[in-house]
Length: 457
Image (cartoon, rainbow, N blue to C red; front, side):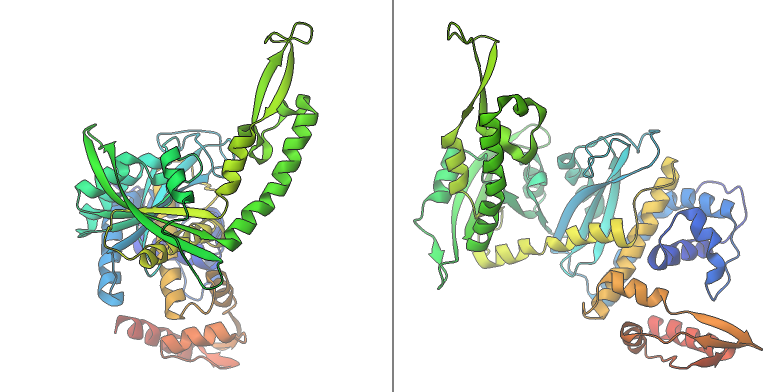
């Protein structure tokens, strides 16, 4: 733990930043300026807030482990199935450091970013996270992040579920060699001709009664290299399925694609100016000398690669999953993979509801502190969401808690805002009620003590 410049209560600062992140997400400066809006007073300074962010980097690992142990004990966490994904967060500043670097931004921004990996359990509760420099490629984060998480929590066998961005041979080899498993999506377009032929072959598919869905599975072995460059053989089960609604969605997108292809064929000069709608994969440039017919750099003509286009049309509606779990039923594999939406939604909550971006702090250690606060805020929000049986979104829960205010009248008496259905459901969870119009300060303090007591039970 680094030496402090100022004397302050780290726990008190952490609470303020956490309450602010959940109830009224803003910059650290704004959170400090709004500290008097809370019923309990916070004796913190702006200097203590920024210094605390630096100190939080030192407790990042220990705090994640402590939270994991508490969640496991209280909520019976199951880490046999873990969802994993990565995303990035942007900064308003153009300055770089070891962590904050220009990389491939998911928001197509040119300012520096930081990469985050996040793992959640099957209940949707965050398990752990790691930060990587902004120029780190998505596929290279899984191995170090999973090593860190398994060592930190002493996890046993994990079946990792992730999308195709993390489906590299090296990653899958690492999982298998460490006695873990995986369920990952497999790209169909762009796959080998043998794989596509097997996917399109109708033999083996089982249809539902309405012919709107079909599914089959087959086994395969393939060679890949592990992180040490050694060749290993992966034994996998491939689950392929086709859905009519997915097919219809993709064909609807093709209407605009076909319009663009025709536009470029008629006006080749527009071709070099844009690659919107992914049309370039179906068009081939041919340089023609208009006088001799020889292939020279004189005039550009476009040739439509119809065979490639028709092949992709034939693959509309198809999806493939690959797993190391050879004995797992096909339907269970699909159901487990569908749970991946929970982590995508968690990133959305972090970025939007908790306003984890843009990041306003600049120093590397303070960036670490910012994301620790965001992670804990996400965990608490998810726990509350689950306790309310997922009746309400985190955004609505935030709004309800934010509106739970009181106004001082006189002589220790406060006037309470009328609370909504969500707040009353939260009170029921903790066995308390504050359903009054006016109330004395002694009752408010007693109410608070009762909540703390019921939480600890």
